[in-house]
Image 1 (spheres, rainbow, N blue to C red):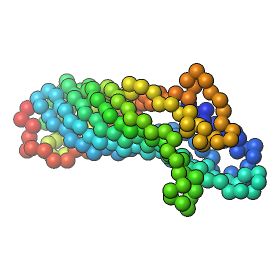
Image 2: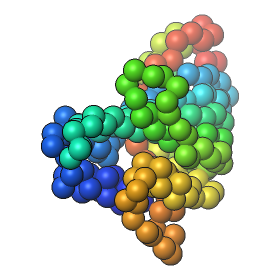
Image 3: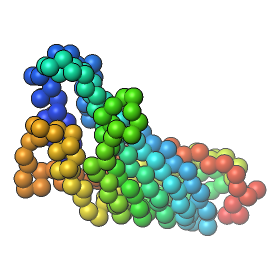
Image 4: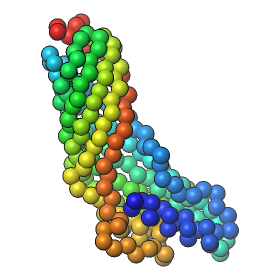
Length: 206
């Protein structure tokens, strides 16, 4: 994994050169996020749109072999807009379920903060716009005024992200050399969503 190569190289270097290490860079087990949007029911289907925000932060902090403090905070974000359509194979006033497809436009960024005190001492070596498709399946329970959705999804972007510049700037002076696209990151993802819906007509007129 490209992020794994970069973070492992950083940690391996500092394990041999640090006097103390307060924090090490790590990879996420999952990335939390939140979504705002709307959906519209139409008989045996629904459609809608939303905006979403995802963020992961990992910090490396310590003192190198020269006794100099270092601080590197890696922040990875991907925010975007999503339009979707879903077929409801079961569709009642209080229970709905079915598969869907969606189209997404996202902005993927990786930023490095080099100083805890100076907010502007940072760089953004990776910033890439993405277009992605998604398939999903959702279960929705509740009435017109309040409903709760649980969904699973798989998302496949239409292109990859090059992380060579991130590697060079995070691991400046000891960056590993990778060839044959080893630092090309494919941000395909899967996960689970929990959504609360508020407000609707008095009934769905099914």
